[in-house]
Amino acid sequence: MGSKVTSMERAVGAVADGMIVALGGNVLHRSPSAAVREIVRQGRRDLKVIKTAGGYDVDLLAQAGAICAVWAGYVGYENEFGLATHYRRAVERGEVEAREHTCYSVITALRAASYGVPYLPMNGLWGSDLLERRPEDFRVVDDPFGQGPVVAVRAIRPDVAIVHVQKADTEGNCAITGTLFEDVLMVSAARLSIVTAEEVVLAGSLDPESVSIPAVLVSHVVHAPGGARPASCHGYYGIDAEAVRALAAAQTAVGR
Amino acid sequence: MTAAERMIAASARLLEDNTTVFVGTGMPLLASVLAQRLSAPGLLLIYEGGGVGGRPQGRLPIQVCESLTYRDGVYAGSMDYVMALGQAGMVDYGFLGAAQIDPYGNLNTTVIGPWESPTVRLPGSGGGADVASFAWRTIIVMAQDRRKFTPRLDFMTSPGYLTGPGAREAHGLPAGTGPYRVVTQLGVYGFDPGTLRMELLSAFEGVRVPEDIQAASGFEIPISRQFRREGDPTAEELAAMHALDPAGVVLGG
Image (tube, rainbow over all chains, first blue to last red; front, side, top):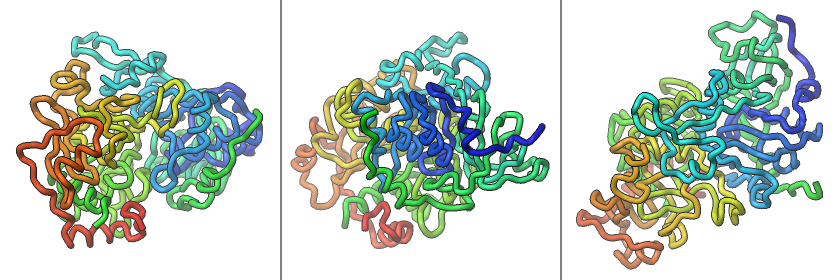
């Protein structure tokens, strides 16, 4: 395999208007923030985002008017940072469609795509309004093996997954330290995967035991130190609280 | 004595030793670590972000995803891994919050107003509906007032006892799972085994029963025959919770 290292501009150039984009990390941790800012700079529109729990990334895309729909269990900042103000406003105005999910149903949808099957059953959600409101993604079906009703979750195959990792080699093998969230699943499910990394090392220099994402699943590698900021990146930096508050307080884009 | 201190102490007292608890951020996290320190040393904390068994020394993890969630623990896993543990029935207690709750412990964290054109868009289910489905005992920690304790939810995100006895099972939810306790600034509620409707189990000192309870609820809450006073946090509980949250992130400045 040759080097997949490229610039942020070129890598994010693979994202086209209207695509389904999976974003790695979780709430304010290891979010692919620099790549998301590049998506905004390139003026993308009508993107559909999938993520279990979005924070700064989804809020920034909502502020910029880059998204039309979000499949997510949760969008917000947790604790003292409060609600995701731009996302909240965009949904309340009807500009962004909240494709209501739970964290585990997002995972189940991605897992189905990564397994190459059209849906997977999951335990749970029974009796929740989510089932009634979202027949596009959830159906209650009879277990063909006779164990009663199961919730079938439709596979969602992202056009592109973007994840930020601590270390990648030039071919795209990635070493993630700390919790993985559902990054590995996301990359397996997506057609294309862009990896941004704090450090890019020579191919062959990562201990295979430390590799969470194999190069075969990765299409672009970008050296992006600080690429998760203002979210944290375990082992490198914590949350930049001031920058998070600044986005929450900023104006939403007007006149789009 | 603040409401947060009381709610955290009361929540911690609910957790039995040598069980597992699926934790979110804020008060549930502080309550779980407090229980681990004082009364349930064998409590295994499973964090939504993938950390398992973290025993944070010094300050608490502020969010469910950070690395303190598995420090001195057993596993730095992934979210799909820990949620699958829950689906397989490995989670004894799950903590949830909510913007609205009804008498059967059904929860709304999705929208205020109609779902199609919400007045307030809330963060959504997160893992809420998942935890409410698969945890054996769900503990809900929330502020109580007449709007939050409502006979009718604007949206039913996370299933409690649905419409009453038999309803969870009829919908396919595992028998024996469901809401266990509701902890608010006024006291601790359980669910009548016969009706599966909320009842008052204990009230904090100074809370007038039933006046204050009823004034802060949009539906009638009967008093359990086992009703007792919930003791205020002890000096030991207070010292331990403040040591865990020296900056007052959860406890308030």
